[in-house]
Image (cartoon, rainbow, N blue to C red):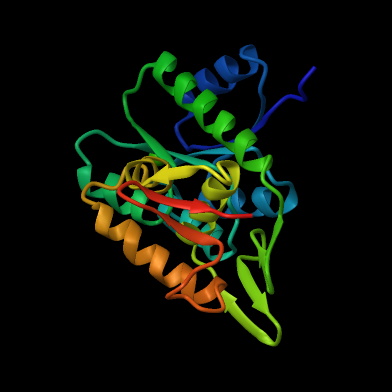
Length: 229
Ligand code: CA
């Protein structure tokens, strides 16, 4: 049997805490509750959850601050924001900060549970990719988010890491620009396929010996890219 997924619920409304804790436990999740932003951070540092449900308006430290701190620490735990109604700006700001998804209060329990399942599934797939990929002289550390080539070390962005994970899962086969947008850029409103190309260009400069004539990060003509391994 799969071990119980561990969810950190960060929320300060008692009725929501009660209702959600109950519903999540009934679904078989292990639930931990933090009632303000600072407790959320200390819980996160104590034990890494599999998923975080994060309210935005919190005492002591806002949900945005908690999220920003998590991403600064390069923690990739999936975060679903619980945003208030009619706060479109909050939603977009949250996604920019690296939230994986959001629900708007008042939300239906069914919808939230579906989103939780989907984020946990994506995380399982992600964990199937290795921490390290070796491409020629380049050693790519996906966890530490850096590429080492001899004495040269380059940092990778979250997007670049996600692009590499996706390419790795599909290695040998082509990955379309649309699929990159869907899986790496997710909810962003106006990314274009040009965005994918720009990121690939940067990635080639970090990984390839000769970026203009790539050995590993190849172009799949008329479609997108593929990883040659
Ligand atoms: Ca609140």
